[in-house]
Every structure is written in structure tokens, then in C-alpha cells.
Image 1 (cartoon, rainbow over the protein chains, first blue to last red):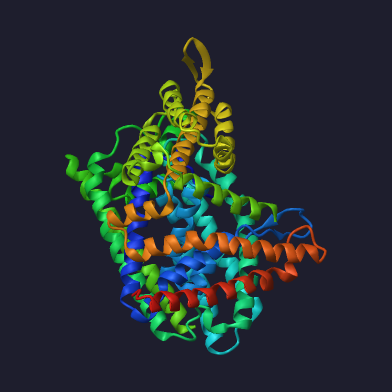
Image 2: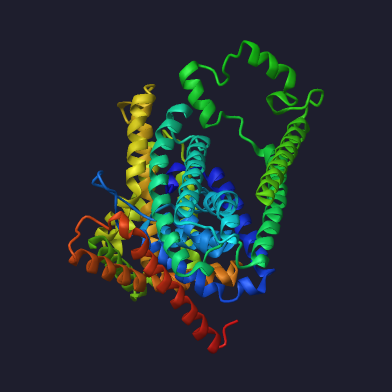
Length: 335
Length: 221
């Protein structure tokens, strides 16, 4: 899933570098707030990065297929080091891979860190792996099967999100003229299969570690401090991203190109227009419910209408995101 | 097994190349990094039909490789890693975009032009990054990153990671060889997935502890 420089436009690559740098900055700040977690982090991150690199070179045979798979680095790191340190370590692995082996482009590093690191560590790690193993670990009922299931689920879903991001980033860059649907159909099933295999291998490794040295896993069983700080970290993350999104949407929307983006360009090729004709009940509902049609505010015709619409959009999405996160954290608390 | 030893050998060759005494190696690492990033941005900026400009741009890093005797076999290895995705994505273009586009009197479809541009862009970006890493040691790259404000935690971990990759690759190679010598030549069977990589992982974590001890004893905080 490593993206090459040729698949991105400078604006998309730059934007992805900004969000990944922001994620790394917030991760470091959160880690520094916990001196106990931060102690000896540099050697641990360095050597674990080297392990993921070496581990990905080992061929794990897939019975009946004649092919092989490898470990999923992101979830493995998040399950051992926690989401923040795991994310930073995966960033190092991707940097070394891009510099040494041209596996992913230099300018595309931000996009690759986001697609492979962010979803695996913060989404797969925090919202899937951790809630699934936490309570069982506390009750001493964490089984090999549960670890395998949590790993497969976390890796598969994060890879699906990452693959979807690759599709969107490539189309937004105007690189491919493949229709959106065809591109998604090309990417998602392949990464579903890869996700299942990587999840099984990572699960087998994590189950072995749990049997041998259970204190090494991030299950919430051994360090309450680690857990609450991680939860606080997610709050800081959300705040930071909301601010960045406001700046990008409100400020940079003034610089938005008049030319159609990749998706509109593809639609134009297929239909002769950048807009699709809409009709029926769904279109009628949309007419009534859309507050900022065509990215503008009714009655504000100047460019400030677009800025206001962008800021309003970010505010609504952020509020929805907070609501979902709140629901998810409540669900994991009551379990 | 073969892959592991090939990767270790590759890293050793790149290390030797970057530490050699040559004109490009003597240039400032910051300057080289900035030049390569600007060059790649310039390549990325070209439109999907701008075949001649991209062709000229792609020639520049290739000429640098030939002029300064950077081994093309190492470059070919990198192109092999980067190209499969670009190849398939580019190969789909002629089937989707059939608008006519003339280039130097030759009539090509828009899709064929876009395919060639995508491949050339990939070649240009990979070659430029290769010129940078083949002439700049990782320590100098880390020093530049530190000077532009990248936190010490990241630069220290990056260097440690780079140093320990060879060591862990060698260990992984020994593990795979021992496994193969016991009768399996088709990769690690599912029953041993966890224990084989898990043993390597536990040893890695113990090693990180020892490195932490050594660093603290030498005054690292």
C-alpha cells in the first residue's frame, strides 16, 4: 500500500504531510506528559522499528495457496508500545523503507504514514484491539482466540480505511482517470485478503507474547496510567485535528482550484459534465436538508460564503466525530 | 532466506556508497535534501499529458547517476519495488481515456500519454531519491532533520532503527535458515507463526532494555 510520489499531486502530498506531522507532534507531546512511558522510549522505538522491518522480510506460508504473507506492523506496534509510540515507530519504519528501498516516495511519506500508521495505531489499536482485549485481560480470561480475533478485525478494518484513503488521495491528485467505483473495487477486496492474512500472523505473534510475557501487551491490565493517558491523548488529537481542519478548510479554501478535481474529472469523462443529474425522492430530501449547497452560504455571495461554508462543515463533522468517540468510549467503559 | 541476505547486502552497499569520498558525497546534506524535494515537487506538478517536460526532467537524475558512476543495478532494485502499482495503474489508462492527443507528430490517445507520463514520473522520483540516499549517510540526513526541528526522540530512534536493521535481519536470516534446515522450504508453517517471530520479538525487546542500560550509563537522558 506504499504510495509512490508519482501517484500524488504536490497539494495532496503537502496536506497529508501536514496532518501526519500534526499527529506525530501530538503523539510526542502526549508521551512527554508521561515520564514513565517516555523512559527508554528511544531505544525501544528504534529496535522495535528494526524488528518490524526484519519481521516483514520473513515469509509466512499460506497453506493451500502457494503464496506467503507477512506481519502487519502497525497493529503489532500499537499492541506492544501503545498507539502513540506505535505510530511514531511505524513512521520511522516507513522513513527507512522510503530512503533505503524506494518503498514509498519521499514526498508521499506523509500520505503513507497516515494511510498505514494512523488507521492501524489509532483506529485499529484504540477502537478495536484495546476494547476487545481489555476487559478479558482484566478478568484473566484473555484467550489466544480472542487475541487472534481482535487482531484480524483491527488489521482488516484499518487496511480497508487505508486502501480507501489511497483511492481518494490518488483521485484527488488527478492522477488516474479510473472511475471512483472501479478504483474502489480494485483496491478494497485485495486489501481485505491482505488484512485477514496480516491479522492472523500478527495475532499469532501477539498471542505468543501474551503466553510468554503478558506484561508486554497493551491491554490496560497492567498500567492504569498508560490507559487514561491514552484516552486523554485521543481527546487532544481530536482537538488538534479540528483546529487544523478549520485552518485548512477556512483559510486554504480561498486558494482552491477552479479546475475539476480527479473525481469530477472522471465524471466529466464519462458523462460530459462535472455534475451528475439527480432526481427522485433522495434528490428532493437533499434539496431540503442541504444547508450549504455548492459549498456556499445562501445570501453570502462573496468568497466569504465559501469560507463560512467550509468552517461550518468542519464544525458539524467535528461535533459528529466527538459524539461517535463519546459513544464508543462509553460502550467500552460499560463493557 | 534469499530475500533477507539480499536486503542485508543492499544496505551494506548503500552504506559504502554514501560514505565514499566523491564530489556528490562531499556536498551539504541539507542542500541535497532540499534539491531532491524541490525536484520531486517539480515533477509532481506536471500535468498528466505533459510528456516532453516530464521526459526531460526524468533524464536529469539518470544523467547524474551515469556521470557520478552510481551503480544502476542498485537503482534497478528500487525501481522494481516502486513500479508494480504504477505499472498497473498506468496500464489501465489507455482503456479508460481514449481522447486523441498528438505528441511530436505522433498521434497517441490521452490515456497512452497519461500512462507514459505516470511511468516517467515514477522513474524520475525514484531515481532522484536514490541519488540522495546513495550519496548521503543516514547520520547526515538525521542531522539535517534535527536542525530543521524534528524532535530528538525521532532522530535518535531513526538512527538506532537503521543500525539495528542489519543485526535483526541477520538474526531473522539465521532463524529462517534453521527452520529450513529442519525440512521446510516453503516458508514458516501456520503452527509456528507465533513462536518463531515471537521469539525474535522477545529477544528484540530484551535487546532494547540492554541498549537503554548502555545509553543511560553513558549519560543519555
